[in-house]
Length: 479
Ligand code: AMP
Ligand code: ZN
Image (cartoon, rainbow, N blue to C red; front, side):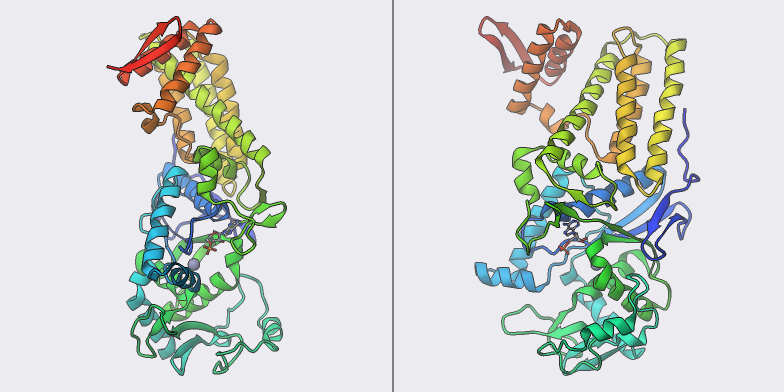
């Protein structure tokens, strides 16, 4: 059998160096990772789902390799958009954010995105933000101007190192823009760390004013609190590179005096008709919209069908292709499970042992793809090849032991992709599922595949569903 070991090297494209680099963790066997989460003022759209799915898959792979992963992803629950929505709906900002955090968690569950080790909320971390802002003021990196606190951008010498922007070019771009209310800034490049409240807005007491934090400071603080001053990986969509991540680096490194994240990973956009899907353009589908037509597993599989750094265009055709591809894998799983249930109980034959060692080639292919900067598109191709291979070698003569070993491999690879081979919830007795199984069995009988027909009957019987074949078709009842 193959050995999984941390030793084989994951390569990551690091936005900071613009190169693919070997991943060397800060602490052997451990991975600390922070992924910027959504602002919770509405249902998430499928563009927001892309970082959730791709970085969840990266995390799953690292866990599969044996890493102990500490994965933190925030919810931004204080923001202009939340306040606007609260006013529109006559609710509090907290009611709005709580509602959409719950909805987001339901969507994540449907897409089989693992809950983070910790999902911090900005509003629960205000003390930490006040304390980091105070440190920045004490060190001369920030200043209070009539209750608003700004970061002194030019003082941070490395500003622009992530987005590769030159500070003088940025200055030129800003010169003509005088934003109302920001006249007290020392320099147009300075950005907000704390702002005083306006009438009706949620606010917290601070040494500078009753108000609320800027957006960037929350991630610096939550990352520090839950992962430490220095972390392995910081990730998010590519629209966050500038200014959000650039500003996070400035705040964290100025306050903590050590490098912030070793590797920066950014996913490309999910597009629609070649344009970034976004709330503001109105060209979006929510994850909830998609769930009305598809199992969200299909959406997940669709997202993973492209490399995370390639733009991905959403289309009905690609979703159908994803649905078919997923079905191919699930059906192969069913076939092997069937062989496992019915196979002979003696030890694996010599031929089977040979085939099993050949199976390791597909595992290797899969791992090579995943270690090449998380190339899920190629990893999926390896799974398709494996499925083709198992379809060709699993049959009524296969031994239980052989089928079980093949299934274990498929299950492990699918688990990294977050693809569920056998859905437990459906199996408990959901009526649509039972009807679907009956239709499959009827088809199997038509195809004279009696082994499959019997296995479906047995599978349902094991779940307490009894089938009765009548002249009007197959009827079912619960035992
Ligand atoms: P937001 O709520 O806008 O801060 O977005 C949450 C996450 O979704 C961030 O990591 C964004 O970069 C990401 N994101 C937003 N729109 C898209 C898109 N169309 N494609 C890929 N990622 C996106
Ligand atoms: Zn962030």
